[in-house]
Amino acid sequence: MDLYAVIHREIESRSERAIPFARYMELALYHPVYGYYMSDKPKVGKDGDFFTSASVHPVFGETLADVVADMWRISQMQAPVLVEIGGGTGRQCCNILDRLQQEAPDLYQAMKVILIETSPYHRKLQEEALSAHDVPKHWYSSLAEAADKQSIEGVILSNEWLDAFPVHIVEKSARGWQEVWVSSQESGFGEEKGAVTPALAAFLEEQDWKLPNGMRIEINLGMEQAARDVARLLNRGFVVTIDYGDRQEDLYHPSRKNGTLMCYYRHQAHDNPFAHPGEEDITAHVNFSAWGDFGEREGLKEIAYLRQDKFLIRSGLLHKAVAHQDRDPFTSVAMKRNRAIQQLIDPAGLGGRFRVMVQSKAIENHTGLRFLEEVWR
Image (cartoon, rainbow, N blue to C red):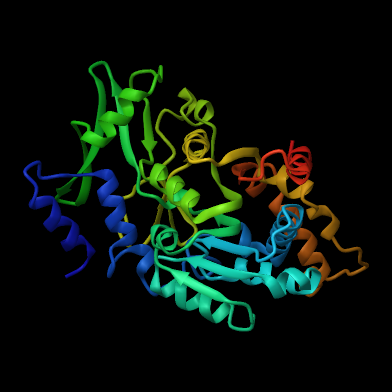
């Protein structure tokens, strides 16, 4: 049996002879045997399907390490914890630890690391990447599992985590909202429009969106529980969420009438999620308004929201550029570093596409918190 057979069998088992797109996306990405993220194949970098900021150069992780160290220090954490959710290969976490070991040895000696990773393949890569670091490390397969086991003081960090949640797709019509369902067709799988599932219908009833007919949007219902679990895990500290997305008014703008769903296959971007099920990444832009609102209900206070380029610059990225007199761009370490810095803050690329939201919990009226708010304003 393969993923096509698994999905086809589930479709045929339902009276509608179709499944909501969110279920299709869940199976395509997270089926325990055939799902894209669960498979033993490279996903990030030149041998994979896409690049991330962390894969561009260690300077990205170095900058995040400085931010984490500042947060720990200004809030006077005695036993700080770094939690990374969906860390992929472990490269970013390793770069952060390298920097902390070198520049903040006192914090490095006192800290521990928690990694939330669903994929056994990625967990293995993370264990290998972090093997040289002699700090307490613990893995959980889900955020809920981690929150059930403990409550920490520290920083919860994610980079391209929320965009990989399965999303429902709805389209506005003169008769109201219709949901996109997936059915089996001669060529494989295809979409059809049908009734809105109950949980999604309840969510839509709460909204006051005045969107034109024909407008298609993605809705991530899983973020509400994710925010709840983040708040359960974090007793005191900060949440740093980096992802591509927008505030709701920009995300659901008529200029995006076809939605934001994208697929990445061998570094080629396209919008057909049925082309390579289980062999490609499927993502949708993050609704940062919803993420902030869900967090607010759970005691997470939004203290910053800005583009990645501005966040990195205000966090000291440009100070990490290296002066040099090198001439060969292929062998120069300094030139490679400086090119990476330019790439990370390029407003037409990573710098402009990605957003950063910073939230705090139980650090209200703290002098250090006001300092951070001023830095990222």
